[in-house]
Image (cartoon, rainbow, N blue to C red; front, side):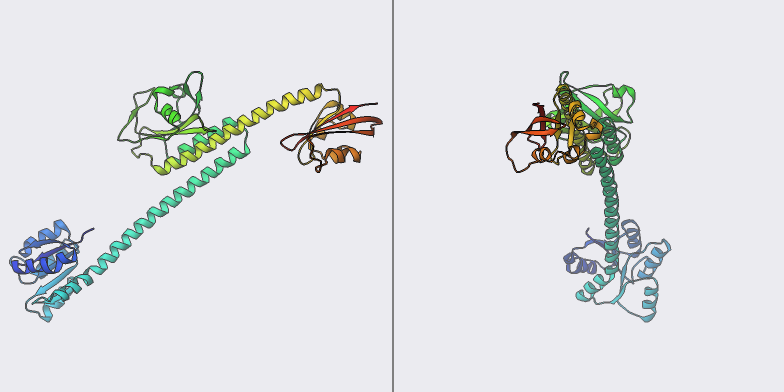
Length: 410
């Protein structure tokens, strides 16, 4: 910011000299007044960073000018110039708070040094104020970031610890509204057959709003979905709410992308608040959208695995031969009724048990847990398994688990 200096002197030559040879070369913006009264008015209205004033002037002397400013509680750093210096004048001037006292004729270098000295305190105070403002702003941003990270951490724990998709998605939306200070939030998923987005989870939305579906082809949320890019609208370009006459002053839509396919949109809206969302809000919302995507993927994987497990379990239990599924750590993952009867354990007791504890037949246990044999499928006969001879067949899966089938021979 350019500093401004007010020169008050009834001599035009001195005003021009100070302006051209001292002040403008130092980068100051110069204001001038030709008498004390004019100088008082300009000092009160313009509030310059520094005032250089003569003592002997029409209407108001330099000391009278300083006295009037003091009466109005206006503190302008001042350098007093005088053609006839006296100890009495100097004492009075310093009592009125001047920074320096210069006797004419003026030495440009002396005045330049005096100006720097006079403004040093003001400049330091200004720098201090700027640093304090920056520090307060940084502290505020750090507090907000810490709060944001804490919320994201808690949501992340929910995603990693809960398979309840309903609960996780609602926590994501609640966190979105809280972190960005929004009035309303929603998570919409794509109905591919109808080409529409429907509300899957929401915060602060009425029942009418929750039932509204958005066409992918003619809505901002649909645009975010189709382009896989964030859509942000500020208060300078409000958009109409679909189910009321209210205008959205600001909103953010972040697409949910799963395996390069957009499956939904996370959004926040403000209808009353004047503050538009910023890039920090968008970043936080993108992180939450990522958590939502992970939760949906985990739920899909769990449901898929659960269906496969149920199918496999049904197939295993329909087999009259003893059948086991052993994981990569040699623990029982699944056992059918025939195997349970053979080894005298129920399914609930056997699942999670090491195969070496399930059976005391050491040769069979070693055959099943053999990690040195690289064959994907191997067979071997064993005697004295429950008093009978069995052919054991082990099939290695890609995931490291093993399917064990025991067929009784005699």
